[in-house]
Image (cartoon, rainbow, N blue to C red; front, side, top):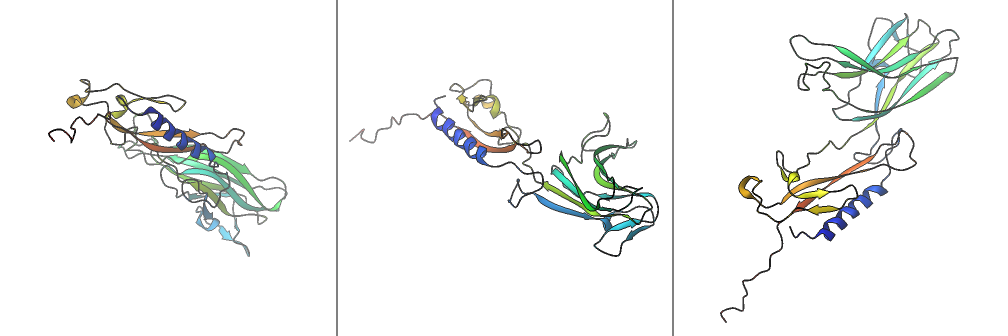
Length: 275
């Protein structure tokens, strides 16, 4: 197929160049808009539930427990969100007791014989007597509410959720204010073809690791339905990993629409003929 390779490659190169200049999302949020925005989600201590005895203290929104117990609060993030990090705010003035907080995923399903389970993530326990303090935990965790709990469960049947838990001692000198979650939206993995259930990626050509697109030969192609030409529209997906970035930095992903059309034929219908 006589597609103008230079034009396609140059467009893709510009696309990659623009993408590579953007900064990766920081672990503790930013003020950008879109998929790189660090969105704050506050889950206050008042949202945590459990046994009786979860009491608000005299000031600053801190809660303490009148008995040794654990309390939970759901993390209300949508499917596919990326949980960058969380920061727990606490008070520990006790020389003998500590405060613990952790993130956990609860797996279940809607089958007749469900298989519940759980998966733990970041956990923090205070130590010493730091007084008013906070702990920052990097997660870089993609929220998946459809992860099967067992091999016999499908993603449609899965019913999962995430929550934070705190383990509190019976000590007025240990209190908890809440947890601040920083998350951002992600671009979902797109289908290779711009049209669902299409086969264009099998026939339009090949894109190598350097970004060079080599179109397929001219059609018609007997291997395609309808004996069509090797044309189509597909997605070009680019991923940029910043060299020297810290471990919490995430790769930048973007995509562009690539249209591979028929060859440019010469117009033999001369308007001077017949004059």
